[in-house]
Image 1 (cartoon, one colour):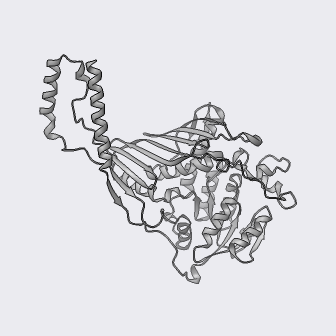
Image 2 (spheres, one colour; image 1 turned 90 degrees about the vertical axis):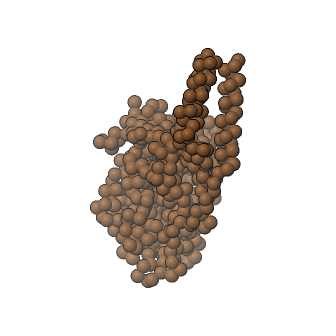
Image 3 (cartoon, one colour; image 1 turned 120 degrees about the horizontal axis):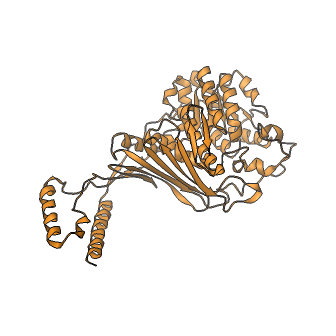
Length: 454
């Protein structure tokens, strides 16, 4: 009974100190990040003529953001559904060339850059073809649909000296950039564990309430071309709209949501390679209609050299996107509109509790000597938490703006998420899916450039 009461008092004392430290956290308001935002006017020689491939729910938004940059002119668009030809011209605000055949955009010598926002199973071919045609390209995440595709994309970019950026953008967020700076400075010591999570809880968030456009049919959609390298099946409007849920076309929640979490942490932690092992768990619990194949709960444990990453992703409960970097000298947490660092110095500030098993006289003598030996060396108080708040303007660097600047200056080094970076993130997503569907651990064979499962 004596030992239990001491343990409870010790717990309450420690908890109160921790709570007090949180309340006393120092807040630092950061200056806005310098970005590659476009100037108010752009010289004629710096104007870029753009071709857009894929004008769906993601592509439409990317097109709007792209043409908002001065000096960017969309002159042509490609989509396999004719309704999006109308949409592209509505967004651009004037008649432009529209086609079902993206090769026409690549053959057009007046087009400088391509933006690719097609389903995952088309990413690789369009990127490789664009590079071979001498076009720089911004391609949506995830970079690939299959592991082998990434290395062909990297080779095409290098061979043709093309600028390639993968469109996640998470690495250019201010939280990822500041976390990288803090971790590199040793603010939390050696990072051995990272935990990231996000969640949705609506049919829309799970793509399940997405409905085919009225009148969609093989008359106005080139269904056979849309299938690409996937198995040939009869026209299925649900698969056209909800392609992310099917293995033949998409990469599931891993390629749609997990890739953002991975992109941010890969950048922040300075990771330069794929994980060497992944173990997935989860299931398809809620959104089971229309033969959906990918899970709606997908959790993964990744092993990197000297580091373990835990990813929690669900479409069954809404949660804020968050990240925790556990270091030997403190905890860095990203959530809401800030970054919180809770320093740890790794020191004992009291004798602890093991001596509670000593006889009283021995225990009291031990504790007295402990304080005599150590109190003078201990800081007067523990380090206090520090909170970094969002810059007053902007959420980070201008991801599209960086691509445009890299093209103009022919400087690929300013791009964070280039083809090599994007491939490492995509491989991690593929490993998560491989582990889930094989019900075994997925191992990365770097020499063979393949994922191995039991």
